[in-house]
Amino acid sequence: MLYQASSSIKGIPKKGFSKNDVLLQDANNLEVKYIKQPLYILWKIVFVLNFVGTMVLLYPFFYIALSRKPWYKYAFVLQKFWARLLTMPMGIFFSIKRKGTQKKGQTYIYCANHSSYIDIIMCYCTISDYFIFMGKQELQKAPLFNIFFRDMNILVNRKSNFGSHKALQTAGERLDMGQSLIIFPEGTISKEAPKLRPFKYGAFKLAIEKQLPIIPITYLNNFMLLQDKAFLKGNGRPGISRVIVHEAVETKGLTVDDVEMLKNKVEQIIRQPLLEYYSFLN
Image (cartoon, rainbow, N blue to C red; front, side, top):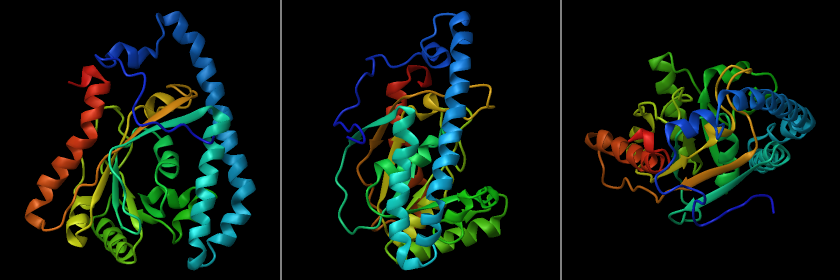
């Protein structure tokens, strides 16, 4: 099997993780931490080599698939295959709890918390139907990887109100075309993960404007597998990425006056499993 899926999240202590559990990653003392750190660094080196190597190997196929819009669906299938190449050889598998069913042919806006670069990869392992990303403007400068943001996905200039508005306008046009969209409402990776950053309003304004349902997604522990820290610091290791795909939140009948309420509701849905998983967040 390419991945592990389950109807429940296994291995969660009844009282949740303590702050010490998260910071030390089961290390009982500082000596064990220093023993593990070189292994984390080695794993991250192999992860980067695997990312670059598979990207180079698949690049000609991506280039062809992205040369014509009708072929984007093939690029998407290839991205899902690439996601397996990036996770399985590195010992990363996933366990999914799905709380609702997704209607075939329905356009959705997916909102997920963002604690690790692995979140992006796991989206292709979690969501089966075609979707597009909204990513930060800086990705335009990423060698090779920027091919995905020339037209298929959408770049957002977070430093410009005009740029953000233009990106949301483009996203609205794609939603009208029946393309589902995934957004990280925090805007960037949380430096204090698993604690959430404040959610931005864009996704919720868009959902109400288009009267489309939102599917919240909680990534419980990706930051424990690959932390967003300096290369020589932080964790990088194999493990099981634990994911919860929540029931759709309907927006039919909501107006611009309900944006705040909708944002708070989705944020709470995403946060609740984190509060149960990590007791120190309470």
